[in-house]
Amino acid sequence: LTSIKKELVPNGAFVYQLNDGTMFYREWTTPVRLYVNIQGKEIDAILPSRKISYEGVDGDAIYFMTDREQFCEAVFNTKKGIEIYYLRDKLKEELVHSRAICSRVIEGKLFVYRMSDVIFNRGIPVDIPEKELKNAQLLGIHRGLVVYAKSKPGLVDPEVSAWSSTVLMIEVPNMLMSCMNILQIKFYAQDCSPFIYFSVDGRVVYTFDAETMELLPPFSIEDTRLESIASVRDDEITVKAKSDAYYLISAKLPKRYAYV
Image (cartoon, rainbow, N blue to C red; front, side, top):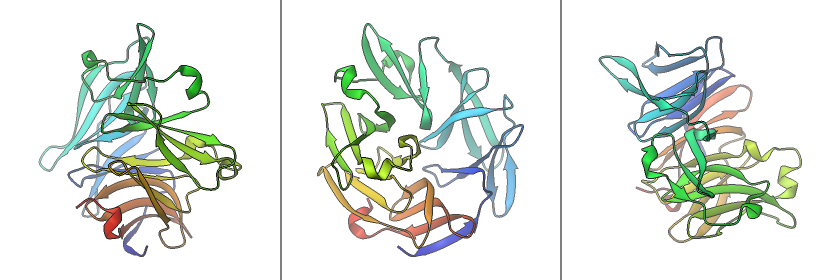
């Protein structure tokens, strides 16, 4: 794909785009920075702690955990700037994962849910034996399914399949993981679209259609290596990628790859 927009971003910045189009940036400074860039003007959030972690987007907000293990929500208001709302404290038995995903065992059964979810709803039950999830990495949630990834010997290309009524597994060739860690898989999915986008080596992006259960041929974005997928909105994908420097790049998706 050819880029239609391209802007420099700091080396250590993570970029997240909300459903309303707002672009959040998080930089690993001390204290950490969370900010938006509106027409060249950076507007910083007043954070409740010096560090935040496990950031993830759900709808029109970004969620994160503070260094005091408190869950918070950040939204941008054109008049008030970035507003931070305290949600709740992390539960003692709760595990927190990348992209603001949480899990816990209730009465012997594993449940997975978003940081933004109401805790009393328990979440999505993972209805496969624990041993089948050995060495699997929890990537996220998409339309009521918990998405995992793990490596599998003998594969040439990634495969995606339903392992149960609530679990979707992305299996990755061992050769792709030879110099990569499965924790480095780039992943993006929103419930408003049937598509799941992911990249293993950063060179190509795979698109999985959860309605047809079809894995589409991969695509690349110019001569770059993907660092993360910031968003897919309508027929436009935005990624942080590296070539001669780090850029935020947007490109038009082919019709079959976009939910418009």
